[in-house]
Amino acid sequence: MDEDDRLTPILNHLSKNFGSAESVYSEGEGHVDGTAITASSIDSLSQHFPLCMRNLHTNLRKNHHLKHFGRLQYTLFLKGIGLSLEECIIFWRQSFKGKTDDEFNSQYKYNIRHAYGDVGGDVNRRGRGYPPYSCQKILSDNNVGIGQTHGCPYRHYSVDNLVGLLQSTGVSDKEVLRGVREDVGKQRYHIACNRVFEFSHKSEIKKVKEDGTWTQADLDTIVHPNTYFKRSYLLKQLAKAPGRDA
Image (cartoon, rainbow, N blue to C red; front, side):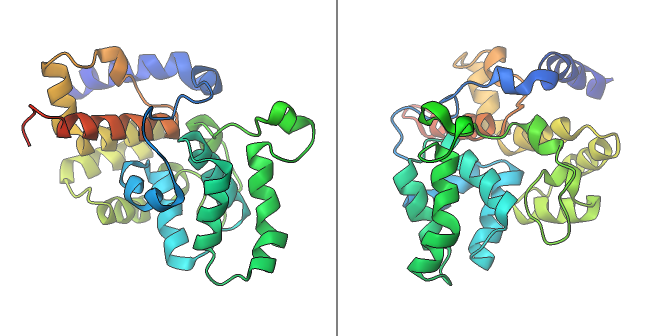
């Protein structure tokens, strides 16, 4: 019964927004005002990334490379959190340590510029480029094959591999992992992701609820990776604010 009470508002929210997740996210919504996002800050900020983007970041750091769709998904996410085109080019150039400048410029730089709308055709008119991928779009990708790291781990990984990935990020609570297994088995991928978010930010969420800093609307179900980042970052910053318990 407790589980039903917890899931009902989430399911109601998803029923309204999942079918049109693109429409509930506006350009710039993932930006954190007053926070400078640079190539050198991505490593530390990755602790606030949802599992899909954190997995891409980890694989990039491990292999110094991502395949095309992984690069695109991650580039658009970084763009959405406020990384400028110039800093994004620096980030990717530094990440591809095994490539020469000529190789990087000829094989990868154009695609980064295209994602930002700096070059390209009608899709990129007015210089806006592509929007960051929503959960809906990432979940709907049916072309995630062996060796690919894009997509949604909650949907595209085996349950055992998913649990192993979560444990590697510090999610070890048996009840949370049991809930994730159940959610994935019922294809409730959004709920699994939100379950992990709630576990990872439980103390901060409790505080903002108790002191009224945030309303329930501020804690609505996350349906976009960039919303996940911004909410995680803000919650952790609030917890560090003067006058709050450590």
